[in-house]
Length: 159
Image 1 (cartoon, rainbow, N blue to C red):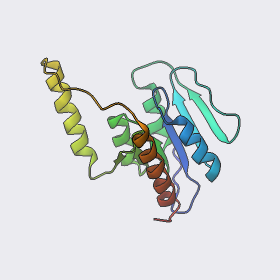
Image 2 (cartoon, rainbow, N blue to C red):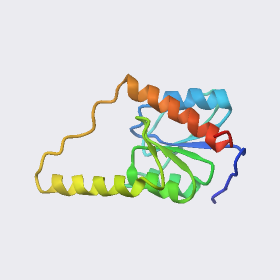
Image 3 (tube, rainbow, N blue to C red):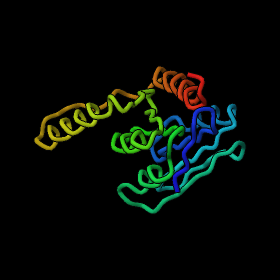
């Protein structure tokens, strides 16, 4: 069941949790703002006892966590994921999508991002070395925190 929230309403945060390096930052920010957090994963995860954090463990599968998040996120929610197809699905229902490195996905940019991803995937399949993302560092963490704060303000009608 999808629940939609308008500006100024309660915001929920959904975390694609299996490989997210910024879970502890999400927990801290959510506690400060009294937000509900769903951390969705295929494997076991430890979540803090304080705050409104719930771990949702889904059956192993290629897109189990992604499907759960996409089915439950809605307008006014924030989704933390590096998975581009999941980000696109969440944007389509009015949720905000932010990567753990602080990249903010938008309805205007997601098509180009997906096309680039597909192009690089095709090149890799042909044997072309395309490199990978740069290592996750402190500046990524700081950018993520800043963008998460801005997303919360926007979801609450403050920007």
